[in-house]
Image 1 (cartoon, rainbow, N blue to C red):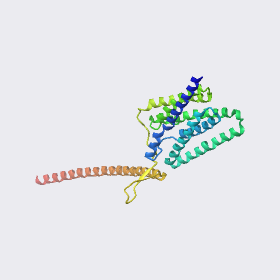
Image 2 (spheres, rainbow, N blue to C red):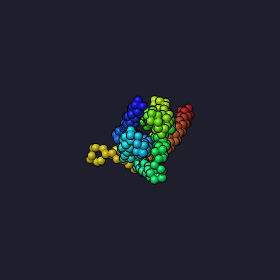
Image 3 (cartoon, one colour):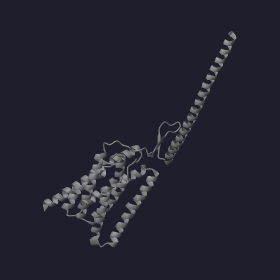
Image 4 (spheres, one colour):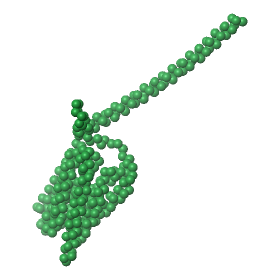
Length: 304
């Protein structure tokens, strides 16, 4: 019995360590976002779902008093995911920023509050842990599957540039550790979602293995999220986020394309005119030859 309790403690602590690694794995992604002052093609959905899942698991850990290690890791998860989402919103384009805020308010505030209140007031205390536990199972599956939201783009572009491998790999390792912890704790609600998470993690890493060395065939899209402008008399660039810049760039492309078409048309007309001039010159040369020949015949007759 002591060995079993020791194993539960060891895998619980190991699960916390691995989960900290999972939560910190997107750190390089957000460092890149900070450096480029743009969210580029990165998706916010995995982080919103991770925050929602951590919040519900935190509620489950409070209801299930024996899951102290679940309590600690999910507090950390709520804090770090909130930081990630805040950074994403700050550097996102206006339209994406609005969608992200709406998603957070709807899911992380609205739905979580509904789960919290309905569980406390509508579900008997003896069943609350089970009900919230099964909600956690569903959420865990969504969290594991969230990085697959970009899988279709990976296949389409043959590039894994915007599918964070560290997140997928960390989630897979975490699934293994928490699965063992759930088995030792005889808690099906902990072990079950991690089986599904392991399978989904393997799928993500297979995709990464297939496309990591493929040449990117992404077509140029409207990814301009920042513009560097230089003030008159000021040699330091100022970085601003603006949707107007995108519109101006599109108009510039359209205008340039139209101007080029007009230039091509004028060149064709000039080419046709040059051909007519060449024909006229040729006719003049022939007439000159005929006239000279006629004059020469007259001279020859006079000499005779």
